[in-house]
Length: 55
Image 1 (cartoon, rainbow, N blue to C red):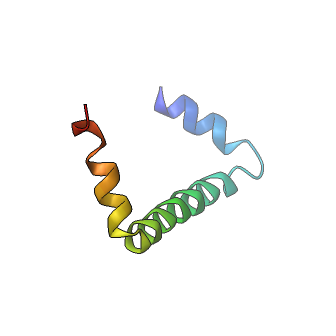
Image 2 (image 1 turned 60 degrees about the vertical axis):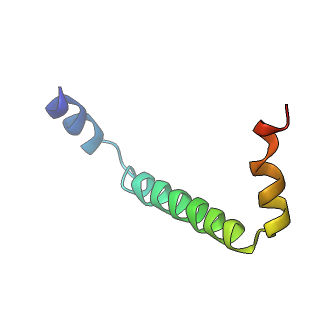
Image 3 (image 1 turned 135 degrees about the horizontal axis):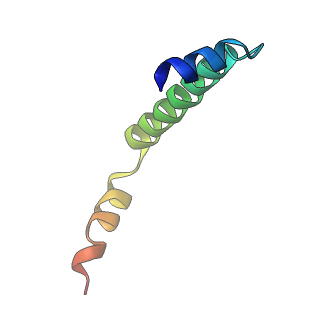
């Protein structure tokens, strides 16, 4: 099955850009998430973490 997929994908021109685009999207998302976590206010994090216990 993998040979069929690999052989088919090798015939498509310009296919080598898609793994690079996915890596850039993945890396950008997690860098942004890390930046948001580091800069989030402590008060907001405490408020959100106590939401399930407010019932």
